[in-house]
Image (cartoon, rainbow, N blue to C red):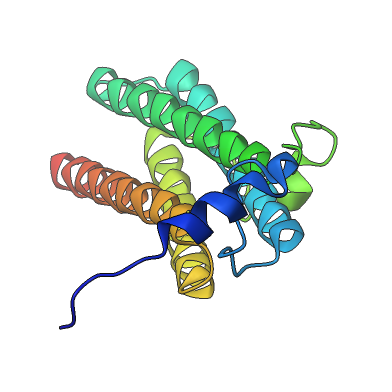
Length: 179
């Protein structure tokens, strides 16, 4: 591996140009508008997940509901934090986060399914997490070599979605064994 070398003078000169671009410098290789569009779909997915988890939190009933409710609430809060991260990144890229409620479910990768029972709720949340995992994995690969910051954010969110799926799968297995 060779020695690191950079032309600081040139970097300083380039940094003074196009200040209106904010964090996006000449080295950015992705199409910002396309990345912002994809991220707005991710934003919609996260918001729909928050709403579904919140409904499940309030509607969960039954003998095992307290521990499941706690999991639903934790996941809702984490999905909300993901939405905030995504909205912030969209703005950094010069875009506008789209929170328009009339089109959120259309843009969301996951669906808003209420579920009739505690097991149905857990199952629907697990399906939604699996959809997010696959979609986000594809986005991570699409961003490779083009936008390392957005890719890193998506990788962090992907890891949390995988954790959510494992939590839900464990709950589902526990519910099946108890019955």
